[in-house]
Length: 209
Image (cartoon, rainbow, N blue to C red; front, side):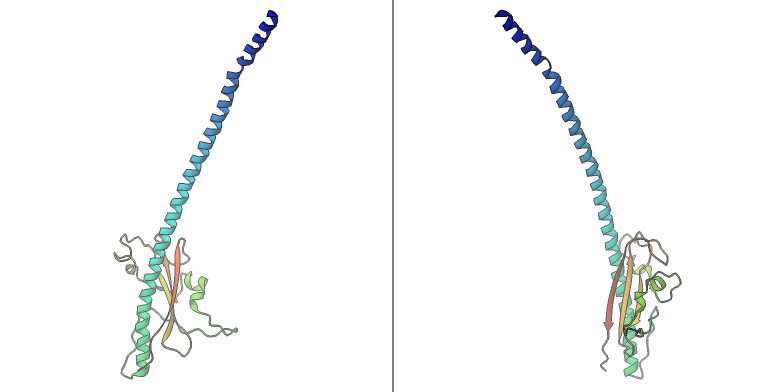
């Protein structure tokens, strides 16, 4: 009987002898997994921060391009309105004279084979992005690089517009298309590399004497 008791106690001691090593192994695995999770979370946070910064920067440049397009559209609208009012006045009153504008106003489009008007502003490659285009009017850069539109005067490329009479036989209505660029777009003509915004309006003056 005593021998059996000693044998059971010996086995009991041997059973507990290996438990600390097993626990240490489990703790090591858990620690490694936690370190891996922390590393993944850190990388994700860094990438998320970079992505948020890029989105913020893109939003800013797009907003500045919108401001440039709005300023260009307003500038060309004012000049065109003066020109149209002069045309109408010349038609109604023989003593009136037609005023000049700092850009060319294109004649009204002619109907295509499908009886739809094809306007100059719809041609991107040969009108807007052509370095030799005479249809596009380059708005003075001072119109947008002022304290009222952008206190940092960061714009490099001036906005552009195309003005065309709306339809044949009507000298009191015109369609105006403006294109503005963000501050990252370099100066010059041709196809831009960066943010751009397009705006369009149709203005009409009264023909009543």
